Length: 217
Image (cartoon, rainbow, N blue to C red; front, side, top):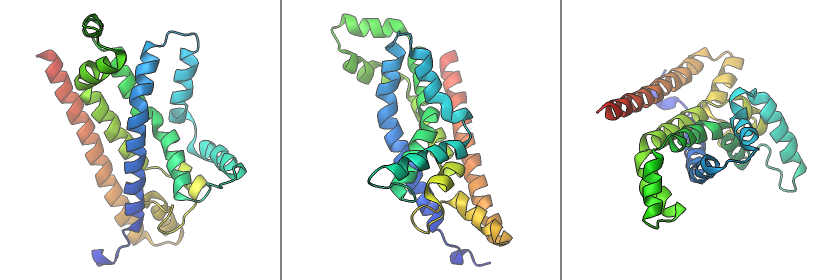
């Protein structure tokens, strides 16, 4: 088959969804992780459990409840790109949030106390002291969240269906081609996503290895 004849639109939708999801998650995860790392209240375990729930919750269950919720608002978000974007943010949130939270909680507290002793505010401490020193965790969160969103299927299918150029991502395209017995295109799409997944894992492992080497110096 001529590769130029392959419809790349589902990949464009996938990458657009992954980029916007990752960007929004990065913006909200850092302040939330910083807040939760300093929060000592009795509800911390509950909050952490809610945040991590998408990791163990079946995507079809999450997608079902989001679909029901979207159908009840005046601006119906079901079967729209905005709808699958919101669903992806919720579903991929722990994959961005948890690495950042772990890095902040394990950060050298003496450096934070030294910053406070110099009359730096919490925001200045976060910006100038903490964030520059947890870059590997932030980058790991970005890569994992991006890769996780690229491979989403259940949540996106439940909330957005399979609308060409709108909600039909690459994983759904593979499902559709398999349903129509077009195994040639299904193989090509699957191979592309397989290669991309390998690259994602390679990058994460490379970062972790470099981070461990740096710590041992």
